[in-house]
Length: 246
Image (tube, rainbow, N blue to C red):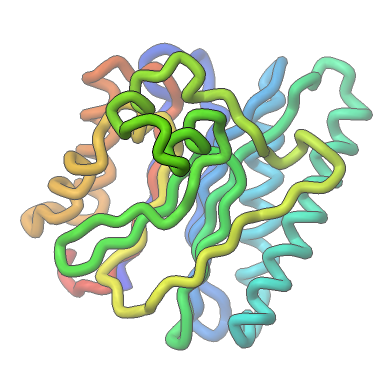
């Protein structure tokens, strides 16, 4: 496996509220996590860091995540724990009003691949050169798009495209969407909306398909492209490829 993750503040924001990690546990099972924080007085990075750090550190210590059902239960329990931790932080820090974070993750074992998502960070898989989005955005615009009320082009330019309907830390109980994906994929790609708001899926696909680029070079090129187009938000990517030499 080839893995790489990268994050960038972008061209407009004063600091980076995104967090990211890729970890492998004792049984060579992989967890990829990307989180996009929000909130006042740099609270966004606190929320996203909690999500990524808690999830990543716990996974890395596991001898194995177990069967698919056990992995789903593990994700649900740790998401509940992270959500309560963020809510507690917000209560204890009065300058952290609006504290919260998105969270998109993927767990890959030899037997299964599952994605989890809360918010509008995105999870994709690449198979035979085709990039497919697995997750659904928890936004008003994402709901309109899912229901066929607007086109992808209209969604990309919609004034409310960043209004979240669900996030960690936004309410006492939040449920993560789960997606069961076939394991015969070539790569996994996670990112925040700082990339997808600037770079289209087709353009991401083209760069990920470039066999002349290493995983690090692909990530750097995607971030550069987002920044050239304005870099209006923090930009974060996580990439796992099964192809040797990439």
